[in-house]
Length: 146
Image (cartoon, rainbow, N blue to C red; front, side, top):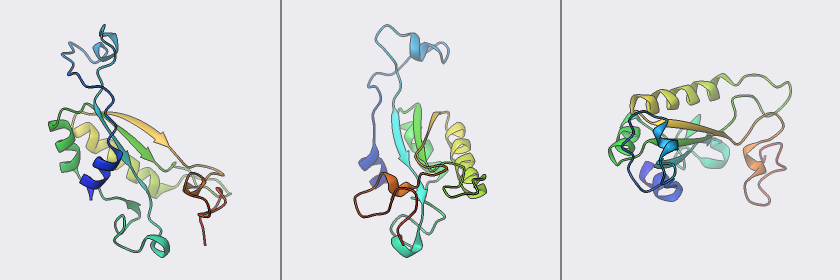
């Protein structure tokens, strides 16, 4: 599953390896930024829409393991963009979504263990659901389809 996600969502941010004395050298190099990595997509699993196999059994998918982050680092990556649902609920009353926060914390910890920089890109949040950016007919943008 991860190979599909990486092949589909691989975003190479730069091609050359950095021989950085410190991490800020990644931005100081005369040839430009020296970041290489992938965009890792995560979203809520909706069993009524996805079933239990499309992106995993949930509550977020597709499934990702420490071995996946380690393999990314071994391939020369130094950054991963976590395209993740927001950590606050989409519907009022807006509050922290403990499951989303726990999943994001788990992903950040795995990236850190693999010595990868992390960029967090939230796609959802108060008043904006995942379906706001999906194809026509998938929902109003503020709620998921029923």
